[in-house]
Image (tube, rainbow, N blue to C red):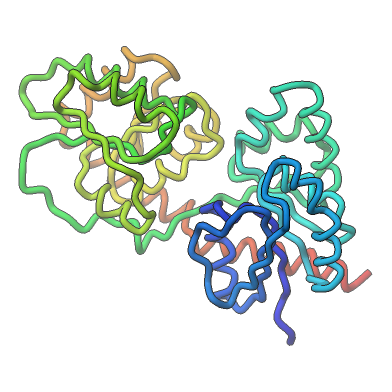
Length: 353
């Protein structure tokens, strides 16, 4: 039997898209990756890299003829576009069975900019054979713009990689987050909550890992607190080591379609405190794998932090439950199997017509 040929259309900078591509190749699928951006993420040597000529916003339109020629030449069994918006618009012109994976901001934020953005989103969503979402909340939001079938495939994580292998040898309570330093992720909320902690029974530290447009502002906000530490963004393979040094993980997002960072932390047996928005309540189960607080509520977050700082047994139990929950519901290997089964189902339907 010939290999299944999949053409992925996505940003070469996308961690999630390149991760899917690398995983598919390892499952004996022939993968082509088309982008108008630079390839900034590691790609398996077996993946065929294809790049558009125009690397700018107008490039989403100018590269369409080149993309269509590429599709006709390659004749893939299926096209998989990652993220609505620019790439979703490009893919909508392809006359083949195609899947569109939604990422979050493309549904929660982009269509609210203006009526034109909303019209473009509706147009492209209705041009795909199947639409995929990472969470129930993202699916519900997307259903406002299309009657197409929407399937849920969570990103999932490698639970063999994300595991806590360290035993703490000191009494410092370390709180942390790994995120892009952008306003949407609410790092300022976490800093303000941390500054309100009054617990004198423990030495408490906050570690913020990541880069982004808000880095300077956040450092200024934290400047007077010597127990807040900033670290530059780290490769995903180094995240488990960082998480293994923490006691509490926090996701204070103002908007979040899924919550990969939260399940990575849970997989490392950490209790997670998260804002009650978007897909976060689906990956952080209140009082079972972590604690939820209402977004923007600094006082509530401070109280949740105090609870976990004081209660070692609760931290441990939430972490154990989190690990079990992730293994059962967000195993990366299962996500890949589910994705390939969807590919085969669509391709088989096409062949039997």
